[in-house]
Length: 125
Image 1 (cartoon, rainbow, N blue to C red):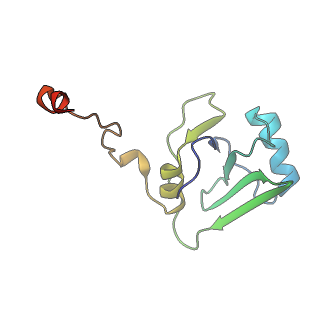
Image 2: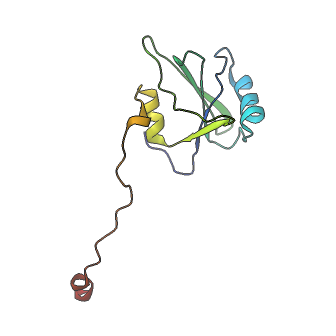
């Protein structure tokens, strides 16, 4: 899943009532997460059984709501420390979450590659 790095993804730590729609989830974003619902960021909510997820965002003058229900199994919600209202995810973690992968067990390689400091190559330029 590719999205601009400026878009942040917040996973709400408290279970959400999946009967809530745009307005109810918007209120949760403002009151529980303390975030600006019109920011264009993605706000992810899971139910208590972790078999349903809703994602809310604001885009070009209107709210967009995605909903995924698993017919079998559960989403792998990450471990959350006490008092934490949300967890920031990146696009890869969100994709793994929606695919049912426990991304806390996934080991990532170092993302930042540095070219070797070879003085012979530098001297050639």
